Length: 172
Image 1 (spheres, rainbow, N blue to C red):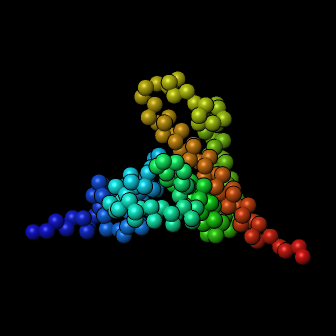
Image 2 (image 1 turned 180 degrees about the horizontal axis):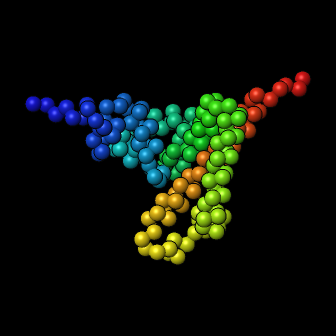
Image 3 (image 1 turned 60 degrees about the horizontal axis):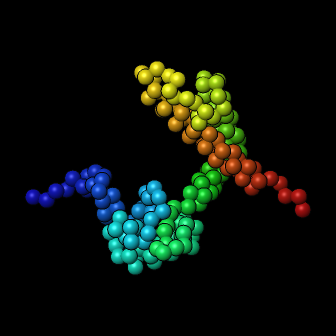
């Protein structure tokens, strides 16, 4: 009897890219890395040869998806700026200027609500130790949402400016 539970659900946690080709496994390994890693470390996570990992890392570096840190050995990490740029372009492409403006307003209002609730300008300024123990988990959840809201607001505003620039009339 074969175990076909894998085909009916997510892959095992220890091998999340098991059914992917080498290029996709290297991509997945670099995306999930928390710190810069050597090609050997990435190869181990991607279950491929170090030579193959280097070839794919070179490809992703040339695309701007990966940043290579020179040294012995060289280390590689995901280029967060690339993914932010990609997200802004996606938002600008899939939303009208008016939709983006409405989302920025909604996010700005949510940020202002958090500022009012906590009496500070940033989630980093909140002293969680000032709250009752029973409320600490809720505060951490709200601070995470506040930080995400700030980030999303910045991304939507960048997308709005990009979309507005693309739709602006030509002055030739």
